[in-house]
Length: 85
Image (cartoon, rainbow, N blue to C red; front, side, top):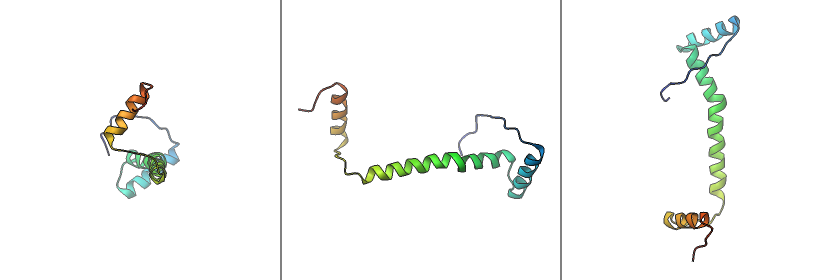
């Protein structure tokens, strides 16, 4: 995990927080670590999996590609509204 440098506050009912504390104790983690893991699993990994799926679908397409120099030239010419000669 990268450097933790942002803070947020989440409020829980006493009984729910006590439940999280029990889980955290069993896992030998802090409640904060438990919550970070849950957020990672629920929201952040999902985004990563979606990106992987997009990459897989794109790689299965038979798209015309060339070496980087040729592709870069086409991109620049296209941005200038010109065509490759």
